Structure formats: structure tokens, C-alpha cells
Image 1 (cartoon, one colour):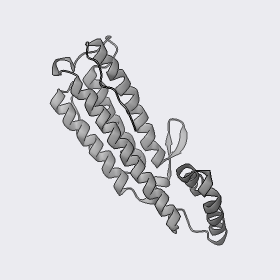
Image 2 (cartoon, rainbow, N blue to C red):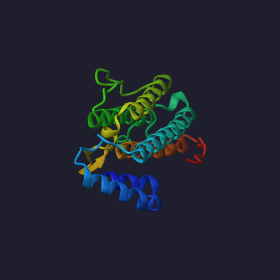
Image 3 (cartoon, rainbow, N blue to C red):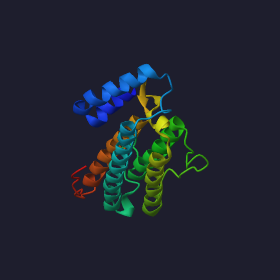
Image 4 (cartoon, rainbow, N blue to C red):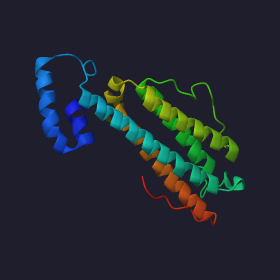
Length: 197
């Protein structure tokens, strides 16, 4: 995504008309690569994006940990069918996939590069690893350069900016968290509601 498109997404059309002219005129005057000469407006937009990503992932962590905390330890190996993943496997998969995708596509060090998590994890172990995953995501949002955050990567047959990859990873977690809500109901547990952003 180019800078104009990025700012359009962050600021909306109202500010784009003002900023777009400045960005276009700057492009005409300069042929420097993306990220070399950021305007104050662009820096502010990227800072807003980082805060939005951190807020989204903090909310994700709260909802995930609520789901995991509700399942009794004895039911972490529960699955509704032979071909399905257990409750613990659903979350293990989220940890490995999220860290692997972000590390591989954003050029980060994968915290699980040399660690193989057991297929079936206890409640305590899984809770610890989920917190580790969310800490990794938060830290990566902070340490990625602006240029890297705005750069493109290949994902699911498409080309998307790295910042959008963070939303794709959260969408993946939402998918599995939804399945885990059903796991709770199948064990007679009423899931706590998730409200707000």
C-alpha cells in the first residue's frame, strides 16, 4: 500500500484532501524511497497505527485469556470429534502460527524457533505461552521500523502491508477463539460475553 492509501485508511477522506496534495507534491519533488523522508503528518499517522494495533492486541489478549481461564484444566484435552483439535491444541496452534507468520514475514526473531511446544499442554503451561505470544506481538509492534511496518509481504495469495498482517493474525485468533467458545458450551460452561474493542 502506498502512503496516500495508508493515510486514507488512517485519517479518512476529510484529511486526505489536504494531506494528499502535500504528499503528491512531495513525490514530484523527490525520488527518495519510502520511509527516507517522512513528513510530520506521516509520522503521526504511523504512531496512531501503532497505538491502534497495540490496543487491538491488548483487547485480543483479554478475550483470549478469559476464554482459556473459563475452561477447567481437566477439559484441555477435550475435542468434539476425532479429527478436531483439542481445546489446548487450538490455542497451541494460535501461538505457533502467529509467531511464525509475524517473524517470517516481518523479519523478526521467532521466540519459538528452537522450542517445540508439546501437542497437549496443561492449562498453566498454555496460559504462560499465550502471555509470551502476546508480549512478542506487542514488542514487535514497537520495534519494527516505520518502513518495515509499511512494507509489503506475500500472504494467502495476496500482497499486503505488514501492518495489515497483524490484523490477519488477529482474525486467525478470532476464528479459533470462536471455536473454543463452542468447546466451552459443549462442556456446559456459559462463555463470558465479549464487548467493546
